[in-house]
Length: 473
Image (tube, rainbow, N blue to C red):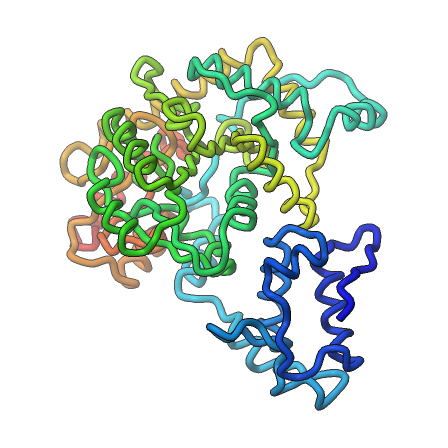
């Protein structure tokens, strides 16, 4: 069998490999029931990253073109191929498998209400426009962006990487070397690349419970098994993490220890050091998502990132989305160069382009001499909204008070969180996310207080207290 893939410009390599295998089956070079080379061997034969072959095989299996048999490897599907040059699409089965689950239906109902001016939007996970810092942009033209693109390599726009390194040094007093930094299209792309390049289908990842990572479909799509580790007021419980490591052969620990999403909890310094020691013992890398780390209400109480405590074994993810708006789509990964090279290759294989435009704009913002002042002003404004909320809520309703970030984790007084309760929240115009979206059965909701002005916070608290009187909160 010839595995020389004819490359084509602007067509992702994984699509060319899929086409090659499909045509080889149709013309009889690959026969029904014939065994294909292993993923590792196929990657070597073709000269691509193994993650590319994993994606090819997953998509071919989903289409019914191949079958994966445990212990026997991957074979051409003899149930469908060889009968027709053009297999018939099973539309009914395709539609059935794509039906949204209950979680997706709930979020669709919430999103449908976002354009209603009467609702209280504590759902959307970003700043309102009035809090987004305004930066003056220098005059530029199209040629300026073309010229700037010359300073971009596989790791991103070099001046922006320098600006991010400077920002981290100012706020955390430690250095992320520019050669260890890779720009991504937001924090979610950073997580996606890590999953694609460093994990294989069936691998186990330990995360906090609850966690926003439960809400990301990319883990399920990639066949990654997530194991939630309960938290206490110090962060992820390490005794339970060790149990999961021993039971499930955990390959990565992934968490956001500072102003955790959704609970707002910050992992203590002692717990951070113990986590690092535990993961070093079992030789497990840590993926640290620090999306909210630049938003402490009191910088004097800010704790060092895990990356600062263990530069070699922690892959660090940062983002500007929570500061200058999600539409900018600027995130970054700090990791050893060998890891960044693997992530970069995966991005190229998946044809995930990195536009120069948002990178140049982000660099303008970070290079603005007023950036730190505006960042401090943003922290103060969010802190004021949090303080106002907690002053109003009093002790009637149980909430975790965060030391930074956007979110408040409000625990309900009921034994369970039912669809009827969520319908009640929607009915009174409170848009929020329930705990089960984050993989937690504890009756609670996540509220984005940074999203609300003082009038909306007043309405929110009054409505919550009314719901509590009816037994729904």
